[in-house]
Image (cartoon, rainbow, N blue to C red; front, side, top):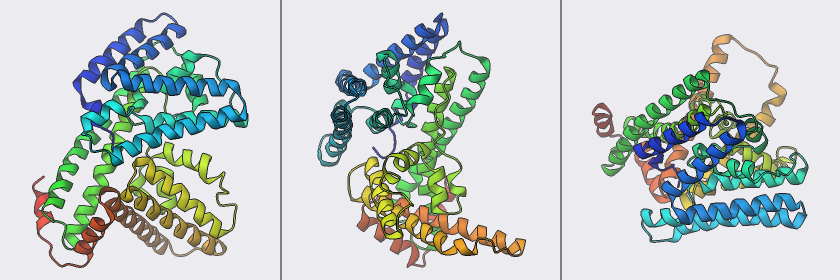
Amino acid sequence: MAIPGPLFLDPQVYIAISAIIFTFAISPNSISRKISLLVGSLLFYFYFAGPKQLAIIIGITLITFAMGRLKSKGAFIFGIILNFLAILASKMLVYSSNLKYEELKVLIPLGISFFVFENVHYLIEVRRGNLVAERSPLNFFLFDLFFPTVISGPIKRFNDFNLQVNNLSRIATSNLVIAMKFISLGFIYKFGADQFANLQHWGHYYNAYTGILNGCMFLVTVSLRIFLDFAGYSYMAIGIARIFGIVIPKNFDAPYLSTSIIDFWNRWHISLSSWVRDYLYIPLGGSRVQFQRQVLNLLVAMAIIGLWHGLGNRFLVWGLIQGVGLSINHAIRRISKSDSKRRGPALILRLKLLLKWLLTYLFVCISWIFFFYEPSEAVRILRAIFMSGKIATFFELWVGI
């Protein structure tokens, strides 16, 4: 799914989380705390995803753990292929099936897009010699099934997570304070996302984006909807993990303040973009190759990011648009590198920075239209925005929020 489901907003989730926290709090030592977290995560997954999904994930986790322990090249290749086949099969099932969401939910493992990338990261790092293959099934299963991140990420790195899991302490007041801040922020973001989602739906239903003023409001609405939705879930996950004293990766860093597309992807879905950078873009040659090859590397990397969100033309086109934007950004940097020492009046520099921000944000907003709508529909929407003069309808919807 492109945007995580509303599981974190189900009251039953917080009853389950409270039970896990209570069990964790009364556990006398680090081992028992790990066990309580794993058992709680298994029960969480069993209750909210079902036995079939849990069985699939346990199978994938067991095979990944075993392939890491075998250490042979064939075992690593098999483990990586298995994980990628699992995510590909899930995406294809969503894309090609006529099943309803409730039926698909039984077949497709919850959070598969996240734990598959975590597994592949683990196998690659073990193969490179940067990680020692984990001997403890308890530790590895906890890494894969840790319930706060299983729904919507962020994508964890094994070594960072394992170091913290091996030193679990009692619940600390300082961690609770930080956790409540993140969880509260997540709920506020999610509430805002729901309002903007409704506004986007009605704006599209009534073709209310016609004209520059309406169109700009529609673009801003779409951009805020996806940011608040995804960031909201990430903040909830970070907050819940912090209750147990576990720090998981920050996933967003004010992405809409970016002044370039490169800067945007250093701030947006950081755990995913850094994964693709480390395990796809750099191994392909990254920016160390000739510019033509770098462009190809960027297009491939961003196409993968697009398809990671879901199979279909809209995700592929959105990813390729991001790849084109990054390629143009890198080209400008190469051209302007020789002029990097040139300075100017402070006012001119500020105006340039403002222009860079505006162009970056406009590019990102336009690209989101292709993320949410099929290419032909996205083009129709953009034509209505930039090639028509009407200005009233969407403004009225905004005022009526």
